[in-house]
Image 1 (cartoon, rainbow, N blue to C red):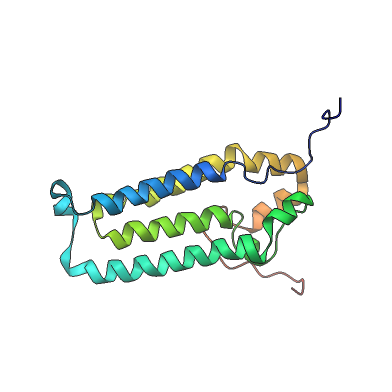
Image 2 (image 1 turned 45 degrees about the vertical axis):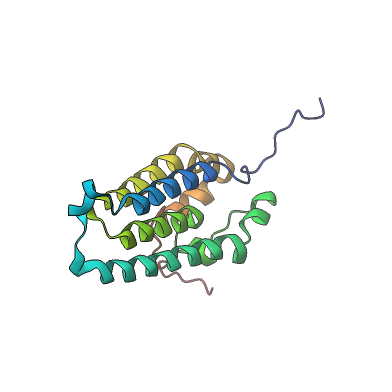
Length: 170
């Protein structure tokens, strides 16, 4: 009977490792297979350098967003303390860890420079959206109710966007 009561907070890792592993594997495969002869027509030599630059900008941006969520916002500590984080990077995007991974992997695909793989970021977004709607968003809504619903009205699920201005001094 000692373990009768479940913890009243989200799991620390949830579905994150599954999402991260899946999109990292897909992106890595795109990088590995970008130069195969069967896919060579997907390369546009005149855009090689812009693809590399855009890709690396996205990789750096994704790692930065992920770092803000994990290290600056201390998401693990807040989960353990059952605190809904809505400030910092969490005021820009509701799922910055997943978004950081998605943006980083999108950068990998773009830097690979083969347009045949450019559909992958759409899959990453769809996969993330479906996972969030069917797991963490349900848990958060049950745990925080109205507070979480109001937060969802103000902050995008996947794509970071500057917070809507409010009358509060932040």
